[in-house]
Image (cartoon, rainbow, N blue to C red; front, side):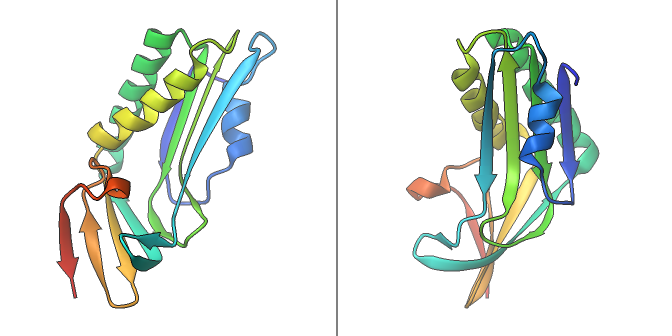
Length: 153
């Protein structure tokens, strides 16, 4: 158990591990966010995602996000893990857990952590389709059709 636990990993992410990292007898609330690989994007079937990162810089930025969220929302602890490498639909690519003495602010803290992470942490995503691939700008909201794309046939 620690106040801040972050990492860029190349192995499957364990939700239970994150909850253990933020847990404690003085913490009456914990919120967990799991970002998983979808099997589609913008009408295309996604076969696989490849995430890459400049690990040292990404971990420094994850620590800044965790520290900022912890301080702003009064969280006892924050844990963030982002996976890199190849992932299939359904696999967890990012996980965030926050915990506090009471539930107030925990949902907001978790949401702010993922939103800030997407904008500031140097992690890149390549989607593999049946008919090609493309690199996506993770700082944009692709679910709503925004963001830069670099199509590769």
